[in-house]
Each structure stands twice: as structure tokens, then as C-alpha cells.
Amino acid sequence: MRPQKLSADERQQALAKLSGWCEVSGREAITKKFVFRNFSEAFGFMARAALAAEKLDHHPEWFNVYKTVEVTLSTHDARGLTELDVKLAEAMDRIAGS
Image (cartoon, rainbow, N blue to C red; front, side):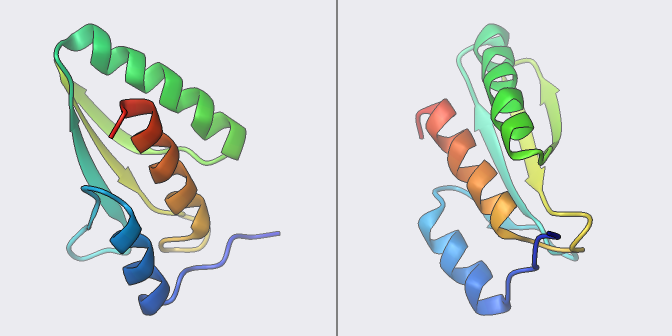
């Protein structure tokens, strides 16, 4: 079954419970910048997050430089934010300890 795009109210409710995530201007997506102590911690986070993403069969857009990982989540099939994005954001926050 194809994931369903969240309504505007559902998006706001989801953002309210996600710490540090915000909407991406000009598209239906959320983003967060994770900053770690060093590259090893950032890479470890990405490895653990990749396993969580694989379990959900939902994969992030992300960018890493040294100790910073910038993540953007959106469900391309639904052309917007879905519950999969919220679940992956929550998993990433748990992994990062935030």
C-alpha cells in the first residue's frame, strides 16, 4: 500500500512532537542538522540511521561534512510528507540521543 501524504494539520502535529525538525521552504519535506563531536560519531550515526531506514524501506536525503549530517525527509512516491518520514525522523532522533 502506498503511503498517504499528511494533511497540513497532520504535518504541524508531527513537527510539534519532533525536536529540531523544520519544514523545507518550497517543498513538502522536513529537515534537521545533526552535529556530533567528530567525524566518527557522525559516520556512526549515519550507519545506524541507514539500518533504521532500511527496516522502514524509506531512505533519507542526507549530506555529511566532517561532524555534521544534514537530513531531509520526504516521501517521493506520495510527493510530500508521510508517516514514514515521521517514523524515520523519530528513529534518527533516538539514534542521535536527541
